[in-house]
Length: 601
Image 1: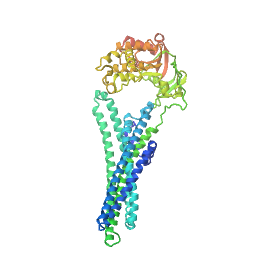
Image 2: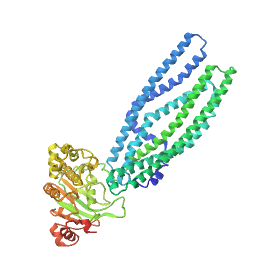
Image 3: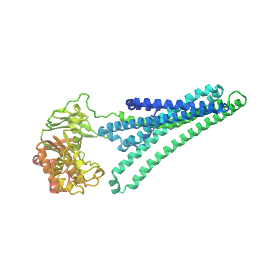
Image 4: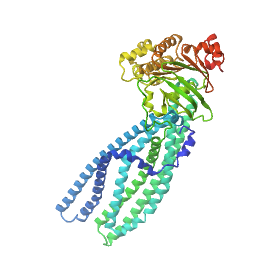
């Protein structure tokens, strides 16, 4: 889905079928009582509508039978109209309520499914496209459940009832009307297939447009910094125009179908009316019978015309339903076991990687880790160092089971991560990622994200430990200052300190720091290092860092190169041993501006 737009459209445009709407039934089933009431109201209004022509015939044929009888006919017609109004209002309320309820459940189900997917899923699907599914596609489904299906069923009932009453009124004229059926059904079938493909293609382009815009807007500062606005405008404009072109083709096809169907139907009605008028003149039927037949014919023809239009809506909604079904049915490559083993409490914090080999799905021929064996004792602070791409962050990813290793196993306290639920062992882990995520909320809420039930005093203590308290109190509303989307109001170092405070507040037995001090100034980095040292006395800490000054005091330093462990030991032992670490240390401590990445270029 995140692939080239043309490929995405080609792969999926031909797969849509109207039967996809059946997959909505599991969401409707819990509300089948409401659906039944809506169906009864729908049938009642259809039946009442079909009685109106009978009343009209009585009025016309009984026009010369006295005012008393005529008044009764008009009163009956008024009562029928009142019942029809009440039934239509009840049907609208019940059907619309059912549609809103079902679509709300679908949106929640899709979000619940996607929020738990492993990163591998998001390597293939753009976030903007997922959002398009939750918004645009569910809106189409709402139009079907809350309107189109109801209108379609009502028109179908009116067509069946109207046709039966046409046959009862005049078999001759009804037989002539049947000659119109092939002429009407033909365009619906032929153009309907074309509409099905175009509707799905249109939705694909809308999703691509949403994904492109989401990516550009979420990185707007980078786009502007590299003066890439024109290129982004051009790319978005191209996708949007392709979406418009596809929509325009769909609109033309539907317009042509509507014109053909309506013209054929009403041309036939005029022809039948002409023949009926001759029968009235010849005494073969009464004027009331002819009017009654014409009304039923118009109702049946209008029902068929409405069905032809609704068919296009159903085609679009079927495509939307199929795409939502794809998200709900997608298989996550990382799944919890059927019979999970619980991580014993209290958690000791022993970590082990045993002969682990791993390739990222997007780079299947390039090993991120190759036969890595690493054991971290409970309460030990271990630093992972090495050039960029050496596999350090991959270890952090595997420890949280965002991916599963291709070979080998990753365990906590002797239990393979694949034998536990992810929620179980992740509660024992606190993370400070390389790119800290700041939510559009207050600074206090961002820190409390680590432990929602924490008190204000605990939030403040965590902020102090992360050297964040001073700058937070200096904000306009202090801890309650709104920091903007993605923390746009904060500097890189401030974001990192809030992320660190969040991890400290979590108070987990395992702390993972992935370049947690890379955006800090020297003074703040020193304060954070002291905080980490205090925290390391009571928990297992794994630190990924490029700057060796950050890891000198670690109990053990593990050196990675090309996905393998090439050395490990204390800072002093590794310097004395020579090799990659000694060279990096010599370069960094003789020129503090150098990082490992720079030193290895």
